[in-house]
Length: 125
Image 1 (cartoon, one colour):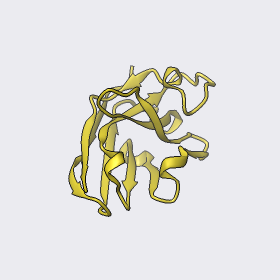
Image 2 (cartoon, helix red, strand yellow):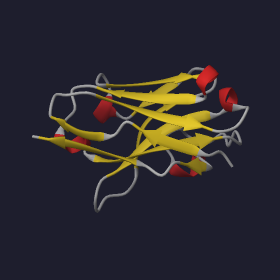
Image 3 (tube, helix red, strand yellow):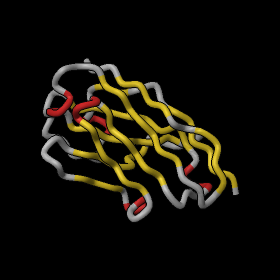
Image 4 (tube, one colour):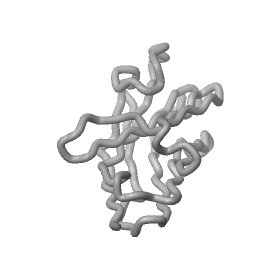
């Protein structure tokens, strides 16, 4: 299993920006499919974005045009640049890794076998 550590969360005003980072263990990071999910209080964990090892990128409609996922394989790190933040983006953000090439859909929780501990993002109005 891959160890994942997120950082970069915090409190920001609406319209502001944050960049989340997720550092991964393992020597095969470049082969992992990576994703970001979020969970707001009282709600289910939902898909935000994913960056596949082959380069494909996926976003949920709610963040398209505002969020950008990227990865630096030399640093074993995946990023989520979040711009034009809205109060409804408030949630705990989780990094996830599909290290076993599950062939699952990018937006499904079950596709991923490893999860970070989460980082809180709070957007004030």
